[in-house]
Image 1 (cartoon, rainbow, N blue to C red):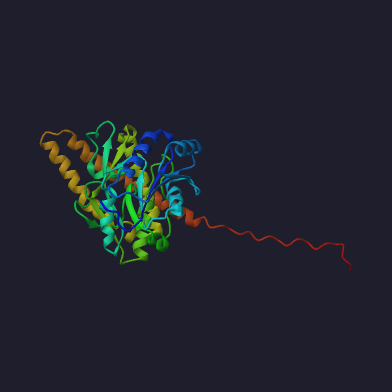
Image 2: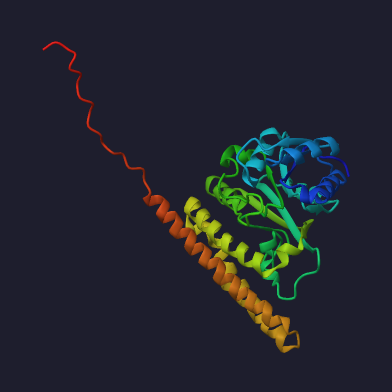
Length: 332
């Protein structure tokens, strides 16, 4: 395929040597694109040993240290600070892109109103999908979930593992907000959601396009296929959503979530019950997981709201002090 005139930068952030093989596979998949990027930027998040190893062993990429606060937001912002592309794409270090990933994303930028494009994220379960894990909750493991469009369509926000933006997005809307994204293994998120909503509020005519044909495969380790992680991720997603709502307003911050809760989840419960009636006993487990996931996420949102209220009430108090007495050394 002939390279078009839109230079593309790809930013991949990494924080742990435990994903070393995944990181190498991610970089290699970007190198093999039918539409090759102009640069690959690997940002190492406050891990000197991993930084040294990556600089010595990863060729064909610019490897840099996160110069901002620890966490995914700071790492992405560090990558943005050095990226030169007109289009800037992001992919996780434990994902592998299909060969036409960038080519598919790039087609959408032929339309001037499209300022961001993202695609499907297929879960690659290390030990197989648990029978109880509902596809409606694949967002828990950072992947495309049931309820998302099945054909190219405008969306409110893109998903961090597979997203791209025009450079001017960051000039208009600013960068990823620190204090909201994932830090190490802490299962929080929503930094890209907040950015996308902020962008729409600043630039109402802009369009974010989701295309399920722009595919990446996202590794899901055994630790994330357990009920404990599911529960923790749902709870922290609720807390993160409360922060997003505080920053951008609940109307925009929860618009997609309302539709998801009122339409997608009831259909998922009904589907699980129907599967059970047809002989799939795990259908009841999936229906139960949907209900439990909604309850836990809602609880996290409530806790996040309370935390925001308490923080707002903790205004700094200035205590007036009496002036120092005058010195007795002066003349009377």
